[in-house]
Length: 267
Image 1: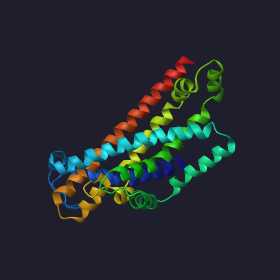
Image 2 (image 1 turned 90 degrees about the vertical axis):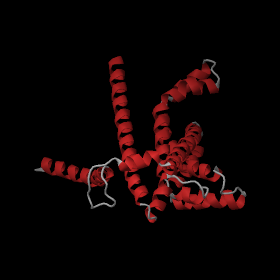
Image 3 (image 1 turned 120 degrees about the vertical axis):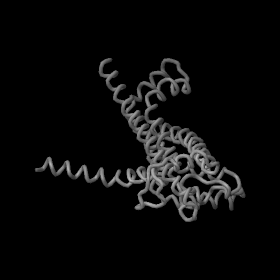
């Protein structure tokens, strides 16, 4: 009975998590104009998604923003984690505490404060992309920090010191000894940063130029309008994003499993 109850509970959780997404995916392959009015099979939504210039520009712009801000956040977060790890105990604790505040802080506060700093204090116009890039970098960097730091703690710190004792320069020891051992944490942080940038709404709303939209801001604005074809095309976009995420997660898990098998065989 206990085993059956556990299975039922897990199934209910899975249904709760994935049923809405699967329903949305199902409707993306129909001619329905609203959820609840099922119609015949059609690829109209996907044709609209990939042939509408407005949607194409929005998707490409969002991806470029996500990759660019994630790259900057990965550099800053990795550098910060390494600095905190090799600092004194008090300094490292202070840096860790400062890093936790943006993680807990509400996105709307971060977005509004960056808007005031960049536009009002520094005089940088919102017609530029700089406030948006700074905002997304500030959003993602603390999470990269948290992804890299555990890998540093798992690393043997004596290897870096041994490389210095053998005559390696600090930069060379960092590149050849430290970075290879924390590469999985860096990759995880980069992937998480891309996800956070794609998902963000509040920071983008406060910092983006008026002529630019991310997926999140575009979806919110589109649901308020009356363009039914655009609304239903966003069902297709949601399905494509979900499928891509599933493929990435499965590929990452398969790769990690193969690497573990190789390490076990090597031992």
